[in-house]
Length: 212
Ligand code: GAR
Image (tube, rainbow, N blue to C red; front, side):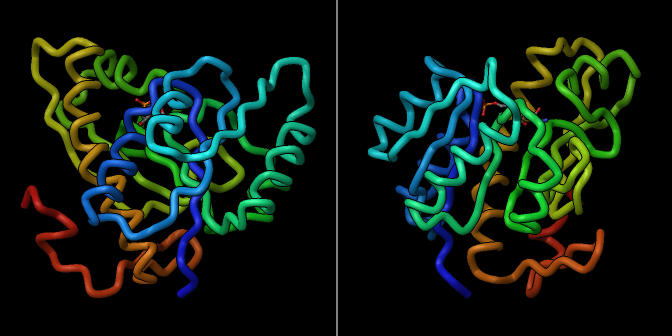
């Protein structure tokens, strides 16, 4: 298994990105975080990268065709030898051609148990629906939004008095635990994809479903 040289794509606060940096620094995530790509100049994720000594490529997508943005990003990915992409709060759909060039080499984290509540208001939608359990999904990225093969899910109980903020906070705590772990499974070459079915070799029941 080739060592992972990872580009993280992020648009905002970057706390999921930070969880990867922290895990790497603690020796729990054995990948090279070589580049932070952002479409939002001024986003907090860029500061986090700079603090961690990770190179950044920031390109505002406004007034630009999706394909042009992606082509310019890919030039940077090639320069850095990137072989894997992690979306961490990256709020833009990637084109079908980009995704097909990076098939099973892009992962995303979504704050709901997909296929429930895709999109940008996952917590609001979960609360409005009245579900009692929500959670997070880590999945490979395909052509459709929040849709690709599921690698891992973790449930979070919805409390009667939850607000969007309180619920997102509790889900986020779990995101910060699980995103680095799942990326480490991939780095170890343990994650196999067959169509929509993803298997993690050598995973124990308590690793896969620690709430059981
Ligand atoms: C996270 O909750 C992540 O799951 C979500 O955006 C947040 C980013 O937070 N992603 C999506 O909704 C993707 N559909 P962060 O900027 O602090 O990492």
